Image (cartoon, rainbow, N blue to C red; front, side, top):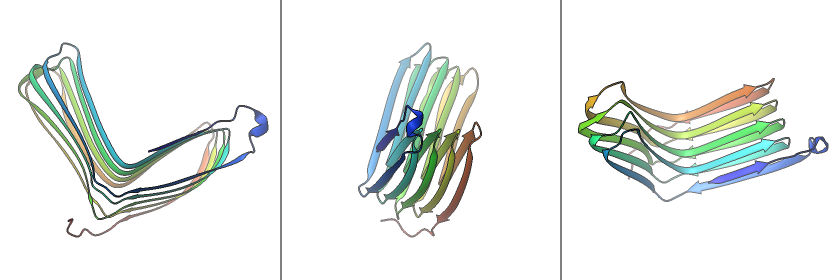
Length: 225
């Protein structure tokens, strides 16, 4: 995982140009497992499990920046979470499980960004699995969310301009599985599962202007070894 922060406190460095180069390759398989066993909880039960083959975050403030990022996820990414409840998991119960092959986040404040991003998953599997075993248990409100993504990138800008090219290519099998059982739920019970081959999210505020060119590919599946 790469985290980069570029800050500039004075107006004189507004025009300074910086460069960020990110090159990540995941070759081995990655597994993340969370098991939460609950007997009795009165207030809240919460669990989160996250797995990523490659991940980067760039925070840019008052610093004009050129960003080049290349990510390749060639190994498996599997994230599993299991919640068991014997009696009561409380007023609020929340479980979040995510898996991503390549993930990136770029936040820009008061700067100009030029970026070229490439994300690619190989012939592999990306899976997020969430399970709740509480057939004899009780809860107030239950919310479980499971998400898997081949490639994902998020860009946010505030008083900034950006020009970005993004290429996402997914050849992985991307799956999400959410299941659960409760004896009694007094309020609302919600289980969600979402799977994305390629995903791009953009949000601009305070007069930001952006030009984003995207190309997303999902390749035909072949047998995974």
